[in-house]
Image 1 (cartoon, rainbow, N blue to C red):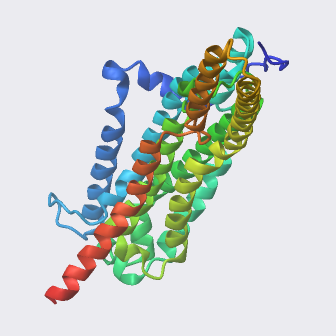
Image 2 (tube, rainbow, N blue to C red):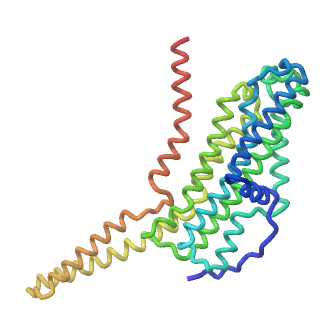
Image 3 (cartoon, helix red, strand yellow):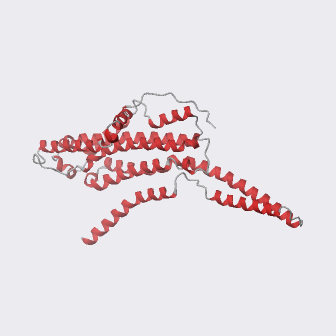
Amino acid sequence: MTTATTTPARYAPSALNRLFSAVERLPGGGWWIYPLIFLALVVYHHAALWIIGSVPVGSPSLAGVPALAFGPYALGVSHLFIRIAGRSMEAFRPASGLSDADYAGRRFELLTVPPGRLWLPFLVGAIFAVGSILSAPPEAIAAYGGSRLSALLVFGPAALFGYGMAGVSVYVSVRILQQVERLHREATAIDLFDTAPIYAFSGLTVRLGIAYVFAGYYALFVNSAFQVGNSLSLASIAISIALGVACFVVPLWGIHGRLAAAKAVLVRGSSLRDQALEAELFRRVDAGNLAGVKEVADALSGIRATSDRIAKLPTWPWPPQVLRGFISAILLPVAVFLITRYVGSQIN
């Protein structure tokens, strides 16, 4: 069965998609490029510190280095999101009901960002970057020369890249999740007994969620001095964690209603058959007509076994272990933080 949708027109891929294609053509799949970008930022960071005299020339410094990872991380996870989305859609295909042409079109839309859409999210991120440096407490920029201007020189490029790519990553993620919601809404061949397509996008959404939650916790733990009194930086952390939770739940919520409705139909059909067979069994027994009673009893037993199987069918589009893993990923850092704070207070 196929949907009545029209194959969407193809468009030129964005610069981001072209970049990811170029990375994948590199030896080893190209994933090493993202640590290399981080190392390049570390080199610039140290050169700037040496130029302003904050650190003696040739001496290493860890000040601000952990925060340099945000840009390469956001770029790398965006690449990963698109790769996982492609594999997830392949797993969902049996439930989609799409023809080959429509499937190709939907897959292209899922994985390909239209050109000219990424400048605005990058600009929003860049505004956050400059604002976070300008509003940082004095002690947070002391290691960068002590002035806003020197902090912008040392940390500005990495901040622009980090916050800008975070904006791009959010846009890419939201766009992918919108496409996932659309695929769920338009699917015409969902089979509750075939759970693989039902769970197809749960791996994608849980990874999206964990990636954003991890970024928020990472910023909070490794750069806490920069967050004190810095409303823009704290807001970006809160947005990251909230977005992580939303990424896992929101795009899969719609299909939950469809699964629950489909299960209700199966439960009602099984219940009606159970009642009809039970009534027939009692009628024959009461009439003393035992011919065929065994067949009716066997059919009733089969219906009830099927009812038990239907009762176990999923109505949530993620396996239980995936949900437990996501909740653990959210709560574990909080538990570690609270325990370390408690232990520290007892020692002091």
